[in-house]
Every structure is written in structure tokens, then in C-alpha cells.
Length: 365
Image (tube, rainbow, N blue to C red; front, side, top):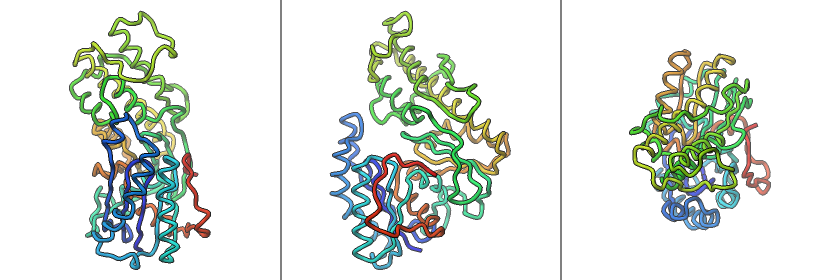
């Protein structure tokens, strides 16, 4: 089955074409500098960009795949979660193509795309991540970790999800970006913070592991990022005790800190954040005895996290699966195309094309 997939969930305009699990083309366009200059994604600019670039990106994807739109069997599009007006641009284009060329339409949950991203193959059929569909064994645990999500699911079959827990406030990727901004790394800060942490002492500051003893499988990262800011203030001798939260803003607070102090802050924060993730994963593995642990989302690009997960799964004899190429970790249309195959196998097509609408806060159910 040949699928043309569109993802405009945030600032990247991405289009992929797949045949079954083989990616024939993946084309993305982003005006990253425009958003970076303003310290974050500008929704109106993101939508304008999507409308400007969708047609040429689709044309380029078809060219790369050596296919015409007539060769396509179905159009797939992300309908949530994501930025509302950004999602809208992709959905409008998908509806237009579906109607104009009489193609089936598939609405895909962006986070399900992340879960299935590891199954992507290159044009020759070789897995990008060393995993094939026949290797998938149930039951399994699936963890989505990104700038907006930290959620854990139990799966007994394809496209069957039971949510076990998640963050009650900030996602882990969001915490990385906010702490990164505090120590002067700008936006986005995840990769920069990870790099800086390599030169720091992960035991320099004893940051908390929130909800370590909560008895459930939920996380919290808001208190951790606040603890980092308190430590910055102490280093600057601004406060002798914890300040009122109303007295500060979550922006660059790193003035007058040494390079070593900043590196140590990055390393100690990262250790606390990743150990918070690992503590609940250990509990979930012990409780549910999964055959596999599947990870998806931008935070799995973090090598320190990959190393910790490898050790965890080696000890627990659990098969670890995650997308190896960095481009499959971040937002991309290839993962939407892969997930769309499983939607199609379950006959989950949109029956009324006009009924498909954006759901910015869409959850997996």
C-alpha cells in the first residue's frame, strides 16, 4: 500500500511517501531560525510557513519517490496533538488531495506515529533501527517522551493502548528546554544541555527525583526545574532560602555563573531527570513483565538516556526498541506513514472527509 503522509503538528512541514513500511521519500522544511529568534515556535508563523511550503514539499516527495499522485492509495495526516492552527494547514491539504484524487483519508495520532517510528525501513526494505515487524512481541510497554509528552502505555496487540501513567505537569522534554533557557542555552535547549552535561559533575547538586515514592507510574518535572532555579539563585547569593515562585520568571538566570557551575547544573539536572524516568520504568517492567520496551519521541535522541535504557533492559532481559536515526526521533512524516499502515490494516479510514478536524490535545485511547 502506497501512502502519502503529511505532518504539520508544529513548525516542520514534513511529507513522506511509503510503500508498506518502506520509506520512498521523506521531505521536510522548516524556518527554524525564525522561531529560534523569538525563543520558541510562533503559531501564526508556523501556519503561514506550512501553507507556503506544503505544495512544493509534496511535489518534491513525489519526485524523490518516482511516483505520481495517481499511484498513491491513501492520504494520511496528523490531526493531533500539536499546535491547532499548524495542524489545520496539514488537514486542509490532506482533505483537498483526498477529494481531488479520490484517495482514502487516514487521520493519524502524532504520538502513535512516534511509537511506530522504529519500524521504518529504507527504500530497499532494510530497517533503519534494526527491528522488523516480525520482531515485535507482545505484551510490551511503550513510552512517548517529547517536548509535550511523557506517557507510558501497555500494549497487548497492535493499535491497542492502555495508559499506565504520565507526567502530571511538565513533559521531560519541556523541562530540558526550560532548564536550558535558565542556564543561557536559548531555544530549543535539549541537545545543547546534553552536550554541556558531558563536561559537568552529575553529583555536584542533589536535585530531587519527584514522585519517586508515589506508588504509581506518574512523573512530575515541574519541581525539578524549580529546584534548578533555586540552586542558581543560591550560587548567585540572591536568596538565602527558597524564593516565592512569583518572584522569578523562567528565563535566562545564569548571569555571573562560571562555565563549571553551568556544566554542573546541566549534568546534575540531566541525571535527576533521567533517573526519574528510569525509576518508574523499572517499576512498570517489574509489574507488567513486558517482552519489549518501545520508546518514541524527540527525547530518545539523548545518548545518555539511550545508555541508561540499554542497561535497564539488559538487566531486566527486556528487548529495547527505539528509532536509531535522529531524524526519526524528531517530528517527521515518515512515522505518520508507518503508523497509517496499521490504521489501514484496522480499516480506520475517515468515512466522512469533511468530519476530520484538528484535536490539539489529542490523547491515545
